[in-house]
Image 1 (spheres, rainbow, N blue to C red):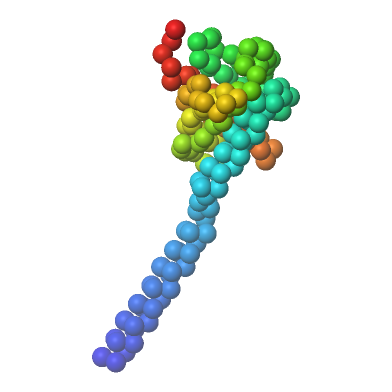
Image 2 (image 1 turned 60 degrees about the vertical axis):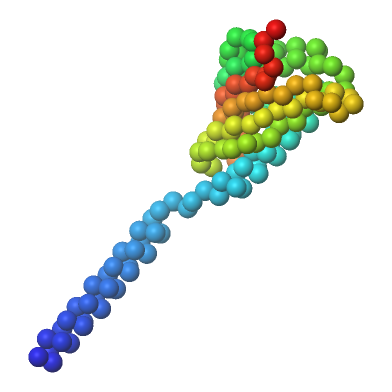
Length: 163
């Protein structure tokens, strides 16, 4: 009887230690969870740099945030494929922008992982007096390349009805 009791206790201890080893191996094999709050903050800093480049009409800084094969779907215009087409559109937008207007962008939500992030955001344009002259929304897809995010796809439009 004593032998049976010792055998059962030993077997339970053995099984318990095997289970713990398996659990620790499993958790060690899992990929680390992405800190999406950190990713969101990084995307917001990109949007802040984006608005700074637009407001300064700095085409080089703005185009540095696009992948070479990016696709843009602007409001009221055909789809643009590649940096050259996007740059031509941005330069045209710079030329017709009213002096003193300031654009800002706010990340509303993101999803994905640290390599590919889909962002949903809003944009506001204010005139030199600070009055809101335009609001809109956008979706951007960012892909990490050589340690930094580049915009690979975007679509944006104004909240105002078409004229």
